[in-house]
Length: 460
View (cartoon, one colour):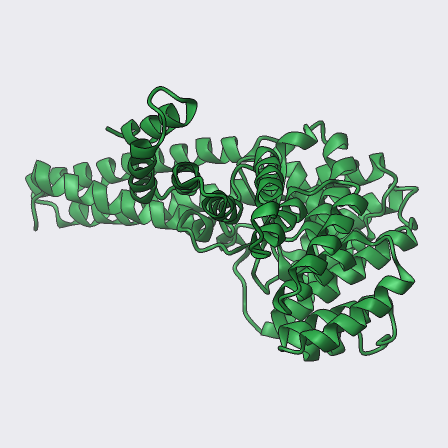
């Protein structure tokens, strides 16, 4: 018949809260990995532009400001997407598995439902409530054990132990139930957004049918009360009912969008799995532009840049105004150490790109730096600075801009730019080292010197 001191009760409560925290993390789809820095972000102007085009009408229908919602590509082969803050993360695995744009548009619509519904904030509130439930349960259990011990009742002590054990489980089930209801709410919101934009819900049904088949093939018995999302069959039943009421169920994706989607899939397949992956993906249509695009990329990645260049030239003859063909041709030419030709290709890509992607502009700046010609450094600095003005988190652009300043003989600004880049990347220690070096070279009281001093004093 154990007795519990105040210290013992505190330990019980801490264990209870720890168990509750683990439960909360386990039901937060994909977010723990991101929080731990394990999510590998992929940057590509072509893919990002396409996803943005998919998302824009849906976000507007959801009442969200498109300029505030960022679409982020994650290097992960699983079919998944999730939200964090004002960002929608989409896995490369989802993009290659989705055979038509409507499937990914449905995924984005679902995630937009989470953002528009304020589900993240409400989830935090539910987590706080669940944590409180666990703590209260621990206190009641500890109190029951102490009371039972004082009364000399072993039954009272056992009941108190059961309360402590049950508290995290009850709280977890409550939280999971909440998560499942929010997923269903996001599905219904997605259906509204798709209807409002004249798009079909067929893609969402296809996605959940894929999940259902995978679950069936796995042979795993699932306790629906212990998962954070409704079972696929439940979601399909809901969506089928909504789909029957939609006049847009038979709507098709525009042919031009389908081709862009296939080219995106080809590019990702080439980078993730090489030529064999591209061949498998387009086994029924190896002569398509998308299949040949993927093959050209895979050929370069395999080390045969000269052969890749010939394949790209054939594609450009067919689509001379495709900015991404010119962009990749510029990348190949840099590998072949033909910087002057690469600069021309990136110039053409920037000129043809309707979105004026800062990523392509940064690559033009890099090509100018790679030329090693002093006459090109002024323009390299201009291009890289313009790119960073639009996208101030691109660490590679800071590095190349620093190189441009160094080649132009401006070591002070080269050091300052590296300080800024490291600071924005969260590398505070390196940022301060570069800021200290820059401060020794910059004119006292100049804007650069003031910025270097700011970086040095932050965190003190």
